[in-house]
Image (spheres, rainbow, N blue to C red):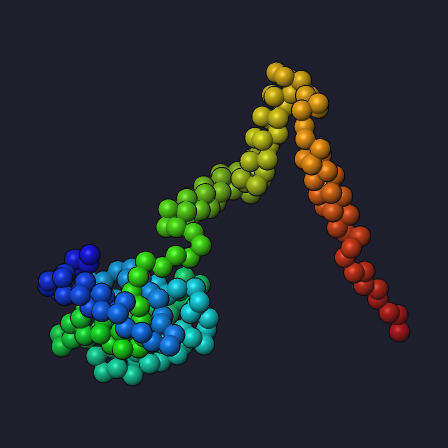
Length: 195
């Protein structure tokens, strides 16, 4: 439920509830990311995140008299709407979006917000590690190194144990290593013509 400075949050919930009742030929699924006085930010579902569609949505929204500015980001799928807070309520902006075929729901994008947070944390950790080591070491080096050290430890503790490795694992490693080691021979060779 949205709680903001616009007043009664049940009005917003009722408007969003009406969106699920509307049937449009091509509904635009969106999620409200943030709402502050004069500003509403939405995240659009992936099927509508291509430049022509985002531009079309922005152009239609900008024709509305109560909307001052619309900013889009195709990469994140966000649309930020700046509207006249003195004469227009959030409910009016949401009603405009409903008329355009928006359907407010929890949209899934292949990964959850928690997964995105973990991914961002790992990227930040990798950047810090690179900065601390002047670009000499990063997680792409340390992670395989750590796994290799665990493998050596297991060999030292338990031996090779080749008799318990399934045949399909060995077959996969044979195929995978062949492909990776011979990838350079598959690349086209360009020759310079002398004139």
